[in-house]
Amino acid sequence: MFNREEYAYALDFLPYGKSGEARKEPVVQLLGDEQFTLLEAAPKPGASIVPGERVYVGKNERDKVDRIKGRVTWNDLTNSAQHECRELLKKIIKEREQKFVDFLNKAGPINLRSHSLEHLPAVGKKHLKVILEQRALKPFESFDDVHARVPHLGRVEDIIAERIIHELEGAAKYYLFSKPIKVEDRY
Image 1 (cartoon, one colour):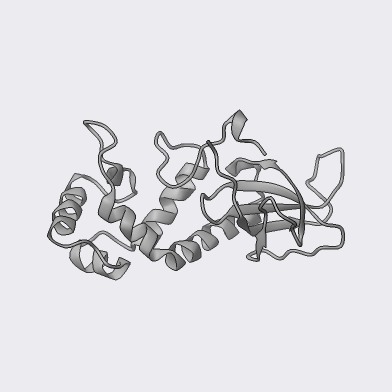
Image 2 (image 1 turned 60 degrees about the horizontal axis):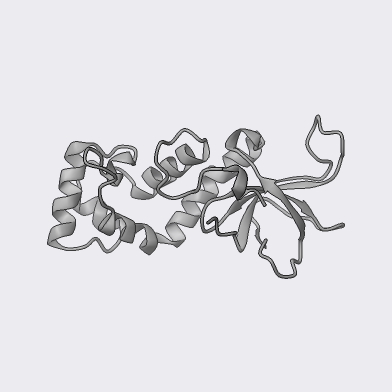
């Protein structure tokens, strides 16, 4: 079952709607802050939403969002929204560092041939082996700890952000951090 987002970050605000649509109404493109759900919403009349702003999109009374129009794909986002999404993901990942460190500490195999950590960009068999050995000795405590104990891995927050973008683009076989769009998931 798909859990609805309670809060989302504005990626782009289109006060005159999307070009090519018959009905011209304001649209805001959003990124859910828990499950990284891409949404389009109609703002309340007179509401102004700036990119990067966190807005309530849950079931209760909303202050700036009138209604959720539905989930959208990466390709439905404006270029500006795609750029903003990349930046916001890094911010969200950094703010929720412990959640992602816990993922690195607890992630397991997907099947007999594939470990979930191998689906992160820059993590191949050698890095996987080092990560598994290091977390067996002592669980990772932070991104800096991972960086210090796993040589040549790169910035963990960038790796995770890149993986989430890959999932949002709809190109992933396995979804580690977001949910793929399905008909029954639509709002």
